[in-house]
Amino acid sequence: MAFSERNASSPRLLALLLLTISVANQAVAIRFGDQIPNPTEDSSDHPLKIAVFALGSFWRSEAIFGCLNGVVRTTVGYSGGSKSNPEFRSLGDHAESVQVEYDPKVISFRELLEVFWSSHDSRQVFGQGPDVGNQYRSLIFTNGTEESRLAAVSKEHEQLRSRSSIVTTQIQQLVTFYGAEPEHQKFELKRRPFLLQLMGNLPEEELERSSLAAKLNGYAAELCPPKIQNQIQAKINEIVRKGWPVLREI
Image (cartoon, rainbow, N blue to C red; front, side, top):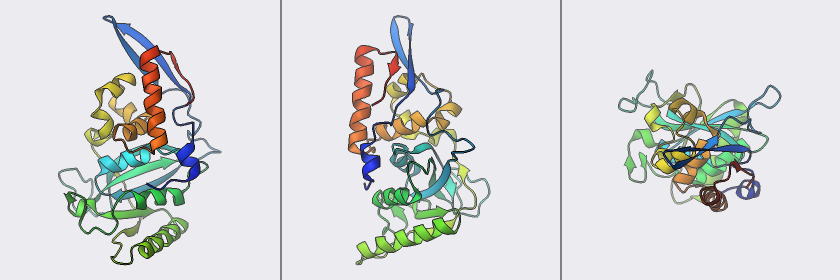
């Protein structure tokens, strides 16, 4: 996966997230308090941006983007089709997509495009890997002229690197993003009950919007950049071993 030097080495992925320890039935539960203001939270003078990509299964796609420094939230859903209110069992002509809410002062749309291209096979037709079907096609959704230009330039560069086959990725203006059903959000994280317990078993709606959950979802799928993956693992090991009440900067 291609990352900028800044993203690959950032030490501030899980900073300022409070841990409270509660004891019940002589068992220790560690809670990551996700209520402390995040440095990348939206504000009137520091707006976040949204990017939407389709690159195969949205379970994997969400995990890929969740770990990136500057990504605040991720949501899986459906885009690129004409059917109103699609559902997982009735997608119509939509593609499985991931919506990435990010801080443009930390990570740019251009850098997100680099991750997009390096994280799937843009030459594969009608699917990705073992997942076959129109819902798994490759798409970049854009907001405005500048994003369309950046997407087109990045596609040209990708085609130059792949002269023997055609890049099948489509570029479309984003019309509507339909959020997927709750059971599909943070899918990889939900397969790791221990991590959910560390977070305090958050309610579904809170889990979907959690910046920490987005990062741990990538960690659970082992799709974070290696250095970040190791940092998170080391911090979890330290918390469990010492029972620290506060998760300090990594």
